[in-house]
Amino acid sequence: MTEQPRRPRPDPHHGVVLRTEQVSPHLVRVVLGGAGLDRFAAGEYTDHYVKLLFDSGQERPLVRTYTVRRWDAERRELAIDFVVHGDEGVAGPWAANAQPGDEILFNGPGGGYAPDPAADWHLLAGDESALPAIAAALEALPAGATATAFIEVPDAADQQPIESAAEVDVVWLHREDRKVGALLVDQVKAAAFPPGRGQFFVHGEATFVKELRAHLRIDRGIDRTQQSISGYWRVGLNEDGWQSSKRDWNAAAEQEEAKALGQQS
Image (cartoon, rainbow, N blue to C red; front, side):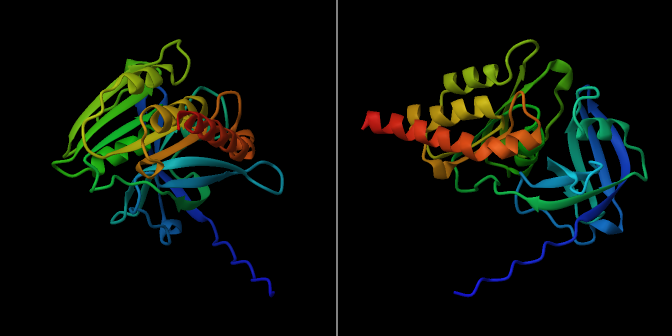
């Protein structure tokens, strides 16, 4: 059997910082533009993401994944929201200190979720890392659609306005000193689901995402085809550590859910 040659990876996109905005105390929006975005295209999904490439001082760059908050194809402007916690991490401090004219290379976009127009209703749940994707999804919903969004943020100052033509109920949850995702888990478990076929988007810290995935699949009997569920990050790990362990983490979760479903049958 002849081995097929690998397709060459496209060159990274080259973004130039046009402006920044302090959206909330822990969220900075960076808007990129420039001729280096001529090949970039997005819009099929509301959870589009890009892989930002930061200089590591070594041969390979540090890769950090961020959701596309908004892509303006006419102006060729790409907005990305960054969670910032002081000097912690790589991407957050870069965004907090970014100035017009600064440059960044990135790959993408990827993505796989958009609100299904055939769904009778939508439920979205996530922490601040999932806020850009949740906001983009709510903004994309048409008039007549129905959605509930549970969004956990550090405190009330991190709320932000979200506009939608749909009938949307946004429930802001203020974490303060609680464990990440604890409020989200309680709210989703206590929620009364409307009749009909729902579509679910649950993203954010891996531990609460895993718990809610099991709840939806085992306790609620929601088919996985109705779910977009993924851990964006995990407490105690940087992105390199999380990405290297994510496959095993998901496999273990699948085994636990399969065992629980088998015990129910």
